[in-house]
Length: 226
Image 1 (cartoon, helix red, strand yellow):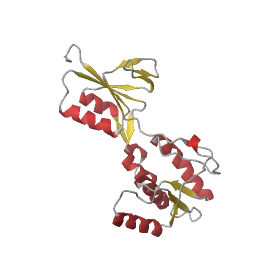
Image 2 (cartoon, rainbow, N blue to C red):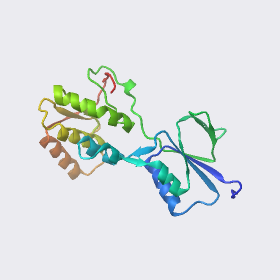
Image 3 (spheres, helix red, strand yellow):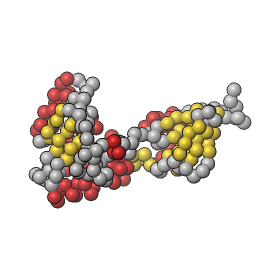
Image 4 (cartoon, rainbow, N blue to C red):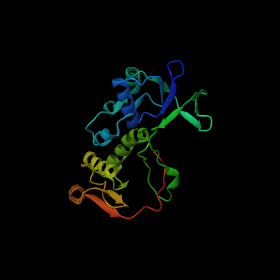
């Protein structure tokens, strides 16, 4: 049994939403005989729910970021700004990019997704991955400026809630750029898993915004990644 002299080691890798809930729970009530370490490569968490609003010009970029150090400190959690380079499940250790190894009894991963741009081929325009979010935040302003100045066809891949929000946000901020048609490719349908009435409302909103819905899957798409 763990005790104060030999606590269990819980290592949280990534500052995702799931780990924010863990910090909140620890702030309400500490876990006896459990030592918790949070490892994140960035000092803040970018809140994905506000990204479409930022893309549309409604929020400033600094409003999207949640500082992690104060949250960890309030929860009694050690915070390390570092990247995880390897996990040894047999030895139960996490190797950090700085060279340090952290031992764990329980490991939790909430690192977020990464778009594999290398898997897309044959597309003539620039590619702007939406994950990690830092890539989107860095790449959208120059792409928006280029589209506003020179025109072009903006294609959003994915008919889920995120794809719909990004397409509508882009249409809003580029509403005066008439030379920028926007297409939303909905390979698995528009908002799969959502209610029929909701899908109909969103389809109507896209049509009213002048967003072309294209059913089918993208076989090839590549270009310089922003």
